[in-house]
Length: 240
Image (cartoon, rainbow, N blue to C red; front, side, top):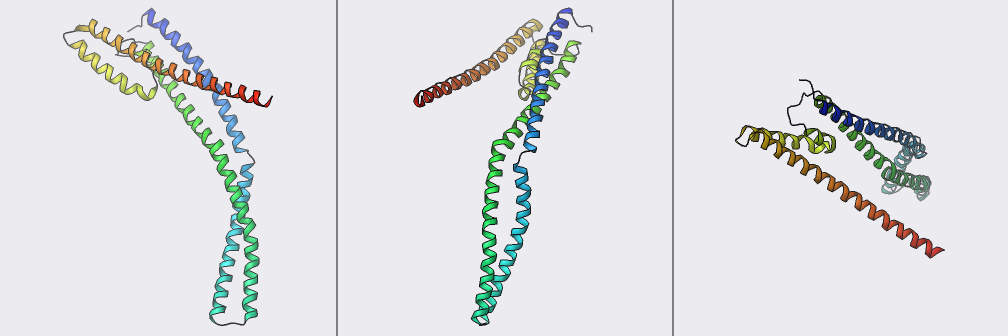
């Protein structure tokens, strides 16, 4: 069936909105890739590489210390000369003196890597996951819009608003429930007009719910930014 002129114009509007979203997403992708390169070339990775080499040396020294201690214990049990026992203990102490700075250095390196991971790697990983989900959502919307613009969908025309503005994580269950209820009401005695009116009310109320959540979230962010700005001005006045 050939789509109406009205549907064709609406689909062009939504294609334009998707095009803008894809442009913004592409710009965000470039920034994330640049950030990935910066993380991969950070100096901390050189420290981690040295840390791995140091761990090998440390393990060998600890094994030598363990062997020396076992030898001292054996000499004491066999009542070896005191000079021999003292010599073994002195060599063991020398090994322990070599171990101590390596352990301290490894602890410092581990602490720096933990901070780098928590402050850089993990936030970037979450951003990449969220961006990947956004790209999947845009692809899903583009696929649906192609079907809707050519009149290949069975749901009412207003369903396109749900696909364009409702998060994809809620979309499948929401559209499925609405489509099922719409079909029941259309077949029932209420008739197709009443079913269409019911579907319109459900779509409008759903979009209003998501719009209200978005406005509320933006208001909370704006309130936080205003509070931080006031704190910053107060600190400046204190030190001026």
